[in-house]
Image 1: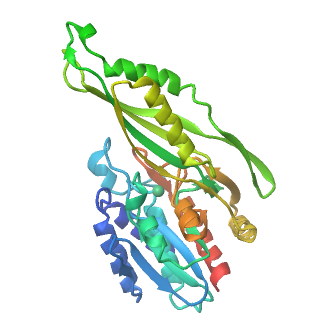
Image 2 (image 1 turned 90 degrees about the vertical axis):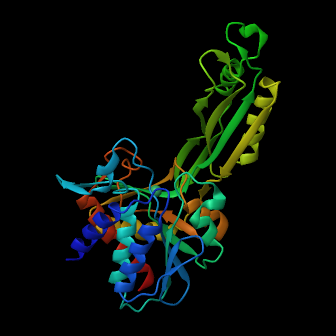
Length: 369
Ligand SMILES: [Zn+2]
């Protein structure tokens, strides 16, 4: 019965597009919560919030947006059940997380809670600047000490639970050249060649290595940086006036993003004598956990035959915002499958989704009842 609600919600959520705008998904969540007798609110940024119970705050978060559906078109929004899996955009990242939170709210509606549960369904998590990110905009008004953030984490019966994540620094560099007719390229300065020299140096940037300790276990991490886009499209028969380079750097928890910005800037100064512009933004990572909470997660997971592993995740997620800007020790643990996010034909194992939803419900019950 309850499992049916989870599956029904997940399928309904998948069929509502939420790239570009989350408004329709927000309306669905509000309607569902009102049907349970709750009074959810929408803030001015488009986030949906619900608070139940009294006591110290405990945050439950899932983002409402998904990445786009390029490459698989309409079928991305038509949920299909096949061989124990549900297919559709957001099946794992993270409409499963939203369905789980609706389920948890419903299961606890008549419970006497000793913690104040704060549900935050947030906007603009995927590829957004900090100033547009719903969690960032909401966190200053959230009074909580701990929380769970629903990003996809399971694989088989293993849970890769996040106690930290790397940060992301993104750069768009516009390199200036001197345009001319391509029959006499020596009269101009080709910005693509300048970019080529820059990239050779960029590949030699020394990455930072650091060792972290998670419940006494040593974890080695290294920062990474990659060129992700190059653009110079002014015509086939001219030396272009400019070339654009996009760079994605993943920095370590605690690493100063200014260092990365300075390194990139000095490389630009060295190579781009005719001028350049940099547009960049950095979202920091984090690392930190509450030992007793991890113990509880491990114990509850085991009672459902799942093994919890704790890790620092390579991709940035909103736990970093709760940690860095709200002093909320937030664990990344959702009901989606970890390798499915952002893929074509994204799907989720129904068993895993249901099991993780029930593990999460039990954890919240242990904390709040
Ligand atoms: Zn996500």
